[in-house]
Image (cartoon, rainbow, N blue to C red):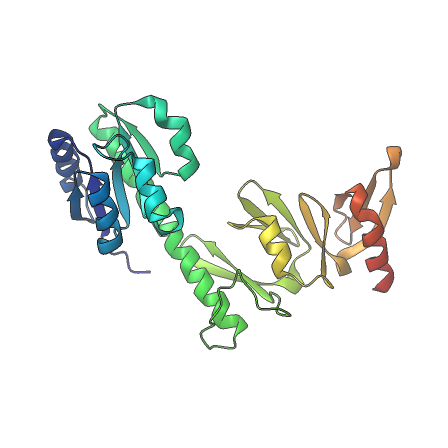
Length: 267
């Protein structure tokens, strides 16, 4: 994957703070300063017009807050954001916008470099995820560009392969090879034999994309491939587990047991 310079926008209403960030950006490699905004309204216009990759966004601007800017642009349309502020009381509120970093003024050159490094890593991750989506769409459409995103399958269509980013490459996993999928924070773990692959996708989003004839969510944290189930085990206290062919045992939610039994009876 070609690594182009990151396009950066600086938003700060204090001239000396603007100059400091601009000077620090010049010391970094592979960064392209595309604009500077000194107000929230100007920032909104420049984000929309310039489409930067990263914005260093002051939280307290003369007319708006940094959070107001994000809400006006829309969280989904925002570039990666590094909040820059002299006020730490905004930290908790700002993190609901999932910033790359939170720089508290005055910050050191080293701390600024850390924020830039985090932005680079996050941006490369986003690039890989976009590649994953395009590749998966091509695989599902037999080589033709798909009009719908892979995480929004058309009615009656289910995933046959899942593309997982892995250190600059993409591993394509046929769903028929998956034993079970486990929730892991904002990620899901695909368990394939003795291998485990981490995918940035929620368990609920995957559940919607997998055939209900082949996969079943046995628990809030686990989806199992039905033809991998070998035993349904009753344990003490009325609890149940499924045992897979691999020997792995997964808990079964009480509200899911009856439906699971019916599905297993149809296999």
